[in-house]
Image 1 (cartoon, rainbow over the protein chains, first blue to last red):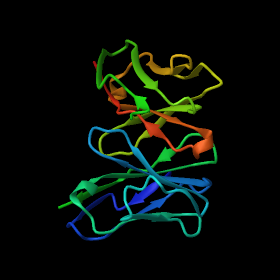
Image 2: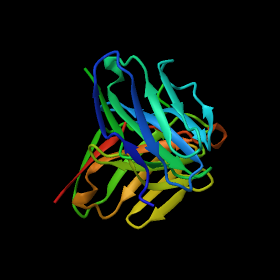
Image 3: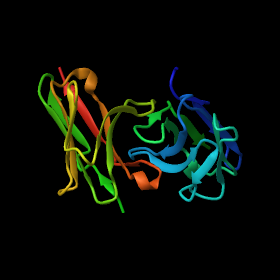
Length: 112
Length: 113
Protein backbone atom coordinates (compact mmCIF):
# COMPACT_ATOMS: atom_id res chain seq x y z
CA UNK A 1 0.00 0.00 0.00
CA UNK A 2 1.28 3.45 -0.87
CA UNK A 3 -0.15 5.24 2.15
CA UNK A 4 -2.76 7.96 2.41
CA UNK A 5 -3.32 9.95 -0.76
CA UNK A 6 -5.08 13.27 -1.25
CA UNK A 7 -6.29 15.02 -4.34
CA UNK A 8 -5.75 17.69 -5.47
CA UNK A 9 -2.46 18.72 -3.90
CA UNK A 10 -3.14 22.38 -4.60
CA UNK A 11 -6.36 24.27 -5.23
CA UNK A 12 -6.75 27.94 -6.03
CA UNK A 13 -10.30 29.22 -6.04
CA UNK A 14 -12.13 32.50 -6.00
CA UNK A 15 -14.06 33.60 -2.94
CA UNK A 16 -17.60 32.30 -3.00
CA UNK A 17 -16.84 29.15 -5.00
CA UNK A 18 -17.34 25.63 -3.67
CA UNK A 19 -14.42 23.22 -3.43
CA UNK A 20 -14.19 19.49 -2.77
CA UNK A 21 -11.15 17.53 -1.66
CA UNK A 22 -10.69 13.78 -1.77
CA UNK A 23 -8.81 11.48 0.60
CA UNK A 24 -7.98 7.81 0.01
CA UNK A 25 -6.89 6.18 3.28
CA UNK A 26 -4.71 3.15 3.86
CA UNK A 27 -7.04 0.34 2.82
CA UNK A 28 -7.03 -1.68 6.05
CA UNK A 29 -7.75 1.34 8.25
CA UNK A 30 -11.20 1.78 9.79
CA UNK A 31 -10.84 5.38 10.83
CA UNK A 32 -10.37 8.46 8.69
CA UNK A 33 -9.70 11.94 10.07
CA UNK A 34 -9.68 15.44 8.60
CA UNK A 35 -7.50 18.24 9.98
CA UNK A 36 -6.74 21.80 8.95
CA UNK A 37 -3.37 23.47 9.36
CA UNK A 38 -2.73 27.18 9.05
CA UNK A 39 0.67 28.81 8.86
CA UNK A 40 2.71 28.51 12.02
CA UNK A 41 0.17 26.33 13.81
CA UNK A 42 -0.25 22.66 14.48
CA UNK A 43 -2.99 20.73 12.68
CA UNK A 44 -6.50 21.29 14.04
CA UNK A 45 -9.03 18.43 14.15
CA UNK A 46 -12.17 18.85 12.04
CA UNK A 47 -14.06 15.54 11.86
CA UNK A 48 -13.62 11.78 11.73
CA UNK A 49 -15.26 8.61 10.43
CA UNK A 50 -15.26 5.06 11.63
CA UNK A 51 -16.01 3.07 8.51
CA UNK A 52 -18.87 5.04 6.90
CA UNK A 53 -20.19 6.58 10.14
CA UNK A 54 -19.24 10.17 10.93
CA UNK A 55 -18.75 10.01 14.69
CA UNK A 56 -17.67 13.56 15.42
CA UNK A 57 -18.48 16.65 13.42
CA UNK A 58 -18.97 19.36 15.99
CA UNK A 59 -15.45 20.66 15.29
CA UNK A 60 -16.19 21.46 11.67
CA UNK A 61 -15.51 25.16 11.44
CA UNK A 62 -18.92 26.23 10.15
CA UNK A 63 -21.95 24.85 8.38
CA UNK A 64 -20.15 25.60 5.11
CA UNK A 65 -17.93 22.58 5.83
CA UNK A 66 -19.17 19.03 5.30
CA UNK A 67 -17.56 15.63 4.88
CA UNK A 68 -18.68 12.25 3.62
CA UNK A 69 -17.36 8.73 3.50
CA UNK A 70 -20.17 6.97 1.69
CA UNK A 71 -18.80 3.44 1.38
CA UNK A 72 -16.32 3.45 4.20
CA UNK A 73 -13.38 3.84 1.84
CA UNK A 74 -12.45 7.25 0.41
CA UNK A 75 -13.74 10.49 1.91
CA UNK A 76 -14.54 13.95 0.58
CA UNK A 77 -14.41 17.29 2.36
CA UNK A 78 -16.47 20.07 0.83
CA UNK A 79 -16.31 23.77 1.59
CA UNK A 80 -19.17 25.84 0.24
CA UNK A 81 -18.99 29.59 -0.45
CA UNK A 82 -15.28 29.74 0.30
CA UNK A 83 -13.85 32.71 2.20
CA UNK A 84 -10.28 33.99 2.31
CA UNK A 85 -9.99 32.70 5.87
CA UNK A 86 -10.46 29.16 4.55
CA UNK A 87 -6.99 29.31 2.96
CA UNK A 88 -5.01 26.57 4.69
CA UNK A 89 -3.59 23.07 4.31
CA UNK A 90 -6.25 20.39 4.64
CA UNK A 91 -4.86 17.11 5.92
CA UNK A 92 -6.36 13.66 5.95
CA UNK A 93 -5.18 10.82 8.18
CA UNK A 94 -6.20 7.22 8.71
CA UNK A 95 -5.68 4.63 11.41
CA UNK A 96 -6.94 1.41 12.90
CA UNK A 97 -9.38 1.75 15.79
CA UNK A 98 -6.45 2.51 18.07
CA UNK A 99 -2.88 3.56 17.44
CA UNK A 100 -1.07 6.09 15.38
CA UNK A 101 -2.61 8.09 12.57
CA UNK A 102 -0.87 8.25 9.21
CA UNK A 103 -1.23 11.45 7.26
CA UNK A 104 -1.52 12.19 3.58
CA UNK A 105 0.43 14.95 1.84
CA UNK A 106 -2.39 17.46 2.25
CA UNK A 107 -4.32 19.76 -0.05
CA UNK A 108 -3.24 23.38 0.01
CA UNK A 109 -6.21 25.68 -0.57
CA UNK A 110 -5.76 29.29 -1.60
CA UNK A 111 -8.86 31.47 -1.76
CA UNK A 112 -8.39 34.68 -3.74
CA UNK B 1 -7.23 27.27 25.52
CA UNK B 2 -4.21 25.37 24.24
CA UNK B 3 -4.31 21.87 25.66
CA UNK B 4 -0.95 20.92 24.15
CA UNK B 5 1.93 23.37 24.15
CA UNK B 6 5.40 23.37 22.71
CA UNK B 7 7.05 26.36 24.28
CA UNK B 8 10.17 26.42 22.14
CA UNK B 9 9.40 27.53 18.59
CA UNK B 10 12.91 26.61 17.44
CA UNK B 11 15.97 24.64 18.48
CA UNK B 12 19.42 24.52 16.95
CA UNK B 13 21.90 21.71 17.69
CA UNK B 14 25.19 20.48 16.30
CA UNK B 15 25.31 17.26 14.31
CA UNK B 16 26.06 14.30 16.55
CA UNK B 17 24.72 15.95 19.70
CA UNK B 18 21.43 15.27 21.46
CA UNK B 19 18.24 17.13 20.50
CA UNK B 20 15.61 17.45 23.22
CA UNK B 21 12.16 18.67 22.25
CA UNK B 22 9.61 19.37 24.96
CA UNK B 23 5.84 19.33 25.18
CA UNK B 24 3.35 20.11 27.96
CA UNK B 25 -0.32 19.23 28.16
CA UNK B 26 -3.20 20.15 30.42
CA UNK B 27 -5.97 17.61 29.72
CA UNK B 28 -5.83 14.69 32.17
CA UNK B 29 -7.95 12.57 29.82
CA UNK B 30 -5.12 12.31 27.30
CA UNK B 31 -3.79 8.75 27.36
CA UNK B 32 -1.78 8.46 24.16
CA UNK B 33 0.97 10.75 22.95
CA UNK B 34 2.71 10.98 19.62
CA UNK B 35 5.49 12.86 17.89
CA UNK B 36 5.32 13.77 14.23
CA UNK B 37 7.93 15.28 11.94
CA UNK B 38 6.94 17.61 9.14
CA UNK B 39 8.78 18.90 6.11
CA UNK B 40 7.42 21.88 4.14
CA UNK B 41 4.61 21.05 1.71
CA UNK B 42 4.24 17.51 3.12
CA UNK B 43 1.92 15.92 5.63
CA UNK B 44 3.18 15.04 9.13
CA UNK B 45 5.16 11.79 9.36
CA UNK B 46 4.66 9.61 12.42
CA UNK B 47 7.84 9.15 14.47
CA UNK B 48 7.10 7.54 17.81
CA UNK B 49 4.31 7.22 20.35
CA UNK B 50 3.80 6.38 23.99
CA UNK B 51 0.85 5.17 25.99
CA UNK B 52 0.08 6.70 29.37
CA UNK B 53 0.82 3.35 31.04
CA UNK B 54 4.49 3.75 30.13
CA UNK B 55 7.07 6.37 30.94
CA UNK B 56 9.55 5.67 28.16
CA UNK B 57 9.52 4.32 24.63
CA UNK B 58 12.54 3.93 22.41
CA UNK B 59 12.89 3.40 18.66
CA UNK B 60 16.39 3.64 17.27
CA UNK B 61 17.70 7.16 17.70
CA UNK B 62 14.36 8.40 19.04
CA UNK B 63 13.20 8.12 22.66
CA UNK B 64 10.05 9.62 24.11
CA UNK B 65 9.73 10.20 27.85
CA UNK B 66 6.41 10.79 29.61
CA UNK B 67 6.04 12.38 33.05
CA UNK B 68 2.34 12.11 33.86
CA UNK B 69 2.52 13.93 37.17
CA UNK B 70 4.08 16.94 35.46
CA UNK B 71 1.96 16.50 32.32
CA UNK B 72 5.15 16.72 30.30
CA UNK B 73 6.72 14.71 27.54
CA UNK B 74 9.94 15.02 25.65
CA UNK B 75 11.52 13.62 22.52
CA UNK B 76 15.22 12.85 22.52
CA UNK B 77 17.12 12.37 19.27
CA UNK B 78 20.59 10.89 19.63
CA UNK B 79 22.74 11.42 17.67
CA UNK B 80 21.17 14.28 15.73
CA UNK B 81 21.70 14.31 11.98
CA UNK B 82 21.24 17.12 9.43
CA UNK B 83 18.36 15.14 7.88
CA UNK B 84 16.49 15.51 11.19
CA UNK B 85 16.02 19.21 10.45
CA UNK B 86 12.25 19.72 10.26
CA UNK B 87 9.30 20.90 12.34
CA UNK B 88 8.35 18.50 15.12
CA UNK B 89 4.81 18.32 16.46
CA UNK B 90 3.72 16.79 19.71
CA UNK B 91 0.16 15.41 19.71
CA UNK B 92 -2.13 13.86 22.30
CA UNK B 93 -5.36 11.91 22.19
CA UNK B 94 -7.94 10.43 24.52
CA UNK B 95 -9.21 6.92 23.80
CA UNK B 96 -12.70 7.87 25.00
CA UNK B 97 -12.86 10.71 22.47
CA UNK B 98 -12.28 8.91 19.21
CA UNK B 99 -8.52 9.32 19.37
CA UNK B 100 -8.73 12.67 17.60
CA UNK B 101 -5.35 14.35 17.90
CA UNK B 102 -4.69 17.64 19.63
CA UNK B 103 -1.43 19.12 18.39
CA UNK B 104 1.07 21.54 19.84
CA UNK B 105 2.31 24.46 17.79
CA UNK B 106 5.50 22.74 16.69
CA UNK B 107 9.23 23.20 17.23
CA UNK B 108 11.56 23.84 14.30
CA UNK B 109 14.72 21.77 14.74
CA UNK B 110 17.85 22.76 12.87
CA UNK B 111 20.78 20.36 12.98
CA UNK B 112 23.99 22.00 11.84
CA UNK B 113 26.71 19.93 10.16
